[in-house]
Length: 611
Figure 1 (spheres, rainbow, N blue to C red):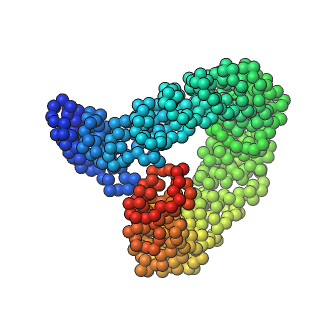
Figure 2 (cartoon, rainbow, N blue to C red; figure 1 turned 180 degrees about the vertical axis):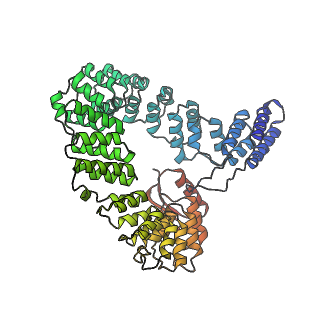
Figure 3 (spheres, rainbow, N blue to C red; figure 1 turned 120 degrees about the vertical axis):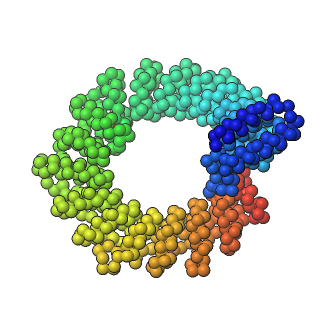
């Protein structure tokens, strides 16, 4: 296939030097493109749920050929039309973002025209990616009003496209930009953009985010520009707090040397240093800069315990606190040990046992966390250490160990528990959630364990919703006297959720099994909403057996797509396909396609407003 593509591309490249009549070259090239599309098996009849064509494996190769065609001979209308028609996934805004003006022009001459609703997206895309030549063409192309928003200049500013900003200034068009223009440029370190705005004579729009977020992202150059700009500076505590959280020590030193007012809260600084594992920052604040005294920092306890870093970073931070006689709270140890238990870090757990004054308070959390991920080695090690230390009554705190191990499918932990003889509590969630997650081996283990099996009708609801038909069949085949069997108190959630999530097999199971068919209008409505036409097909095939339940909510204008509209149109079911937006129309490719489809098929549109 690649050889054919290369040969075709080389032939196209030589078209310009063949000196054939223009119309002959045009026809030959158009035929070559069509043959390439057939050779690469490009299918344009498939559709995404968003109403646009399904690209095939050959599309990337074909797109390369089409681009060569259009760039080699841009004035061949038949060839350009063929290129547009046979490319199955054309996105005008994306082409503008890539600066592919010849393709944009070809699309506009073909069947894909730039609508007013798309103009803003195209202009924004070209601006954000620095393509002034595309902006020039779009400006000339717009015979009426040129539709655009503040995002065009805002995104160009964020990306550092100074030449685009100058184009807008020179264009004579009304300049639309927001505070995000200078804020975004500052956040991204685009000082050339900041300088352009300052010299442009335009009103300067910015917020405290300009400095706060530049500081948070470590852009010292932006901070220095603001310092030297002569403008009134606005910033908040966030600037220094977030620089600390991100460990931007150079930025922190810049603030200290800048002469500006240092806005920060000592308690929040210590909290960030702890939660983000920034031992180096805590050392800078308390030892290098001495902006926070060691005594003040040592007594600070974070208002909440959260780990926003790796286990090792957090552990290093706690060891630093220990070495400098800072408080280590139970919450900090809890965060550390649960993370260590989940990944089997015995070295961290050993350190915990050495420093914790009350191991019994946290051991249950360690065991529960280990059980949830099947870390049997951690469980056995921890229980052994607890016994060695003489820790009593730890079993009572392990109230989720069995449920967690069962729901996550860890038979090894369940078997350890059974053999241990420990009196651990468990609930119906052990089996119900194992069904939800498709763990048939766990359900069989419970059935054969000789233990009391607790479960509810929700085990069927959850298994069906997850598409786990093998569990439904196994439960169905168990006698009613079996420890685990098919409960008849399941609800309509079983079929409704299966339909919602696109699972036909559970629906067929209920139809064939003889169990009561429980479902509501949510089954078809939700299948429609999420684009599951194969599920809708199943319901339609069985309309002679089943009472089809649906409402007008199955067609909601904000998300409905062409494939869904076509399905309901072809189904002949009693539902209105008139599109009633009831207000602003969301500007998206799928909605635009739906509007075109509705108009083409004679359906009404109501309350269409530009959004």
